[in-house]
Figure: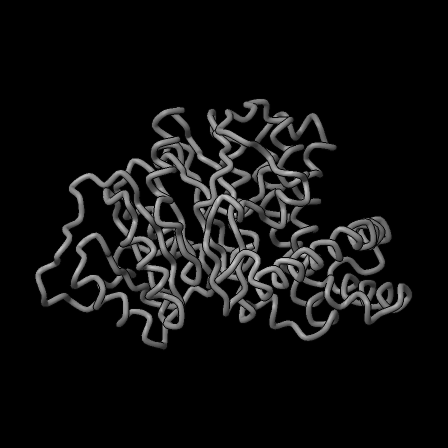
Length: 383
């Protein structure tokens, strides 16, 4: 689920950043190979290091489209000053706050000119050779999507990305997905099953996309507060002919404690927020699948992506489980779900069963995060 801060605005809803006065040192390529899309909202704390990770790429044929969702801090000021020195940066401000990453990303897509599209969140970073590696693989394999690994690091830590740090909380759990570039299956049923099992994890930012694919298939981000990235990538999985998986780490994901889901202080609060978002995202996903005969004729496949959405929302409740007995959790879940479905037993049974089915997995997920923090704190992978 996206950490960033959504229906597309008209062009007059976009405002240019503060006009630059100095002559840019680095001019934007006439036809950039990659359009990097960066949504921003009150990102002053991290935005400089984020943008610098793009400017310092060994591959220079890119444009960086920074779309601000009405920040109230110094985010735009910082990036506008950087744009004065590097013409590859383009800053656009939306006329009103949209409350999520979807509309800024859609705006960036509409303005993009590159052969390929990459997404970057404002508190994360690229490794220095990220774009070079992605473009090289995409060109060699004629790929519609290049799907990579990523590495986490806690908010106040730094990790040196080396061959020894090739792990993620997801691929590590499954023993890794590949050791060298490989073409993934084009069988949609198999892709859906792999999506459900985590091989095609739905974040959008550790991947490179062929722009023509997104435009031809009209793949955009839905107006959702969470899971918009998961649903976006599921649309890609259902339409992209060639997806290439690589073991490369090109994206460094900051484990930001200030995201909305990590600010939740109780299981009651998290269930209240996440149940609505879970149902909303599931409906959008199900509406999309209704246009595919595969899902219409195979309800068991149609259920898997919805099940996956539920899992990803329930992840954010797991840290509260040890504070409650099973009967207490039962009462809390039943109370929240009654707001949406009354005493509709089948739906309640499914959601409640999902919570307990995945409880062990979610606890293991938490253990892996703690293990990573311990490794970093102990100097095993960090400096």
